[in-house]
Length: 117
Image 1: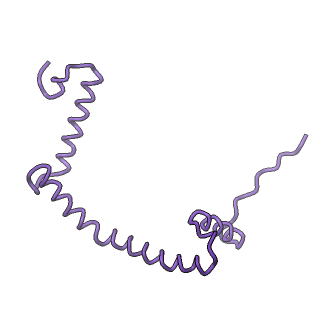
Image 2: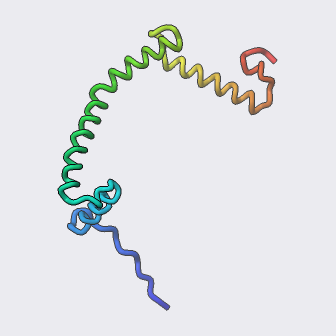
Image 3: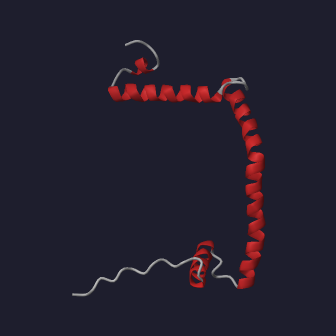
């Protein structure tokens, strides 16, 4: 009977072999494995600043832009910019759950709209 041999441990990323393994893995995922080293360097030099600018804009400008867009959305949907959006969304969710509950129970459709049975 053959002796059981446990699988080898995963490579340590702090060792050079582990770093090379992860480097090959990243190159394969990003498609830079087919490029020369200087082409991959140029791609990295171009992609890194663009990615950094994207994340900077997300963290810097997105909150104020989201606030502006939510106010415009409230104006177009509810007719007023100062509507409490959380309460309105909770009301819509409650209505949808009410409709779903009446659908599951098999009650008439008009009962789901708020009419008595």
